[in-house]
Length: 498
Image (cartoon, rainbow, N blue to C red; front, side, top):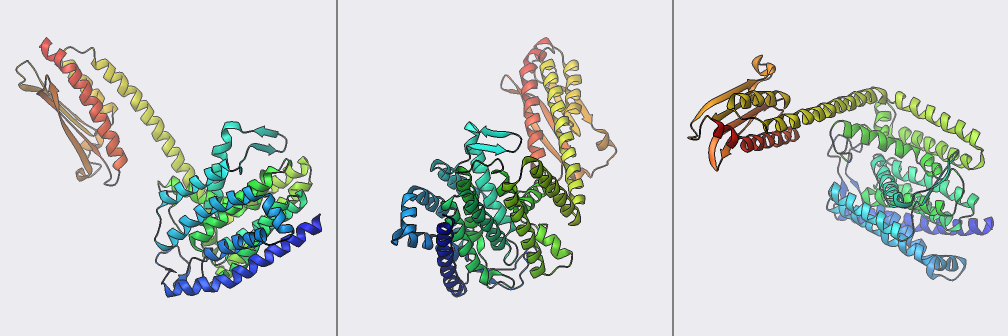
């Protein structure tokens, strides 16, 4: 049986490799003719001259070209592919959706929400067509049925891995090399588990990637673009699902995670770093692992080769995990954790993690303060409902200004039914009095207080903001509206008493 698998795998690998090798220079020539270049127009890019993109078309065409050749040619591959026709159709439709948005992004430019929505839609489509995580098997724990969590976890896995490959596509040959090492690991694992279809998928994708890598390795003459990185990432994620469906090994969840340890770690660091600084997780920067290695003095070629070595070791480790007991597996995971932490410290991410930790603590403290502020505000607004005279209302107003952390507060009230505005109250925060912040950063909101559809007073609130702090200004607007509503609700009772 193994000879049969290996013979077919060599055949589809060769087909995909040859198609990719032939198509890639053709795509490169078309890109040059149509001026479809990846331009070195920001600091995160490493190349210094325009490089043709859209190399992902060659990878996509090589993979599915090989698949359709096997499907429509007589022989053992035809029988196998025809038997799994529904699986192949599902894979073709869903991956083409992701590939399509990648091509569109490379040519016209797609927004982050557009790409994200398409990825989620493709993940849901592949889920409904049978590629799903239904059971998680972990050492020491056993099998756990996911039930309602199956869909969100499957979508999270597919979208996460797809973007992990996309994120790491920042150097010549890096994303394609990472993809090649992973599918090679999955190929050997599939042989071990006797999963012929996953083995052939892995061999086809490995052939398509390696053919393209002949032109993409440093110095690259063509880039795969988002069309390639999104397609490879999506295929890697779905191949892992296909391989896990027929496996009962207790480490089936850990194998792809370990094998993809490099892009997953890089993505976690990138997303954490960006979110902690209030940026989109999809925003670009020059803080990826390969950027850190370049900053340490390594050349682009040495950097890629070093990361290839990391992927190779992770792949070997993932394979070893299928043949050891739980005690040895625990030791392997401990060693991997120590190595990962050491690598993160060596690359200088420790200081970043400390900074991120402090930012997280600050945000937690701010959230707690906001919750306490909301509680006190609610108490004050409730207390207003029992007020029957203006002096008490003025005292409550000043308390409200202080609790809501305004820097200035001013309100006036009509003292009788004639609505002659005579009574007022003022509040100024200590930092306003001390002039700690320039007064040109003071944002103010003034609203009328109405009673029986007539102006019965005025409320003016001010707070210091940075010009770009739109969220904080919105929060102040909400508080002012709540305060205005409370005043207007109670003013008729107060005025009638006066």
